[in-house]
Image (cartoon, rainbow, N blue to C red):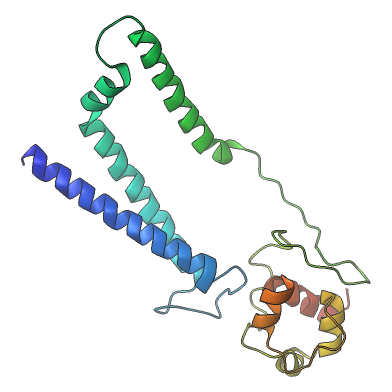
Length: 208
């Protein structure tokens, strides 16, 4: 195969991979956000299954880009080193240091120790004020409890047996909130997570 055709195929696959990565990333961030669990699907795939697709596409994308770099290595080396002259060695050294730095930063999260905090954002007796960006519990621990953003507080009460007033108090929401308010809009306005509601339900049902 001619080098030009090979480069075209690699670039086309890389572009397709980047497009799929962008799509699945946006999908998991905004359409199937954390807490949607197995209750919300697109094309019969839930958030975790789309996450699997995102992972494998990212792996293929990485391999394609690595192949692209190998095929263009001579050009990259000539750009980094430049024409042979005084100081070209320093330029090449800086290029190598920059490459090593990028690789080190990329793999450092994979080598870092995993920290697991079993504590919850919810205070034992007082509820809590939700803070954006704080992980409350394991993303899988309470997914089987039937709580969806499309449900109202009253529907959650009828489904789980947990009083709507208890949920409102535990989440630290204003007392005047109607039982007919849907959980999804409340989640966006008061910045809590679905798993927080599931934890409240679990706590009430188990008496802990």
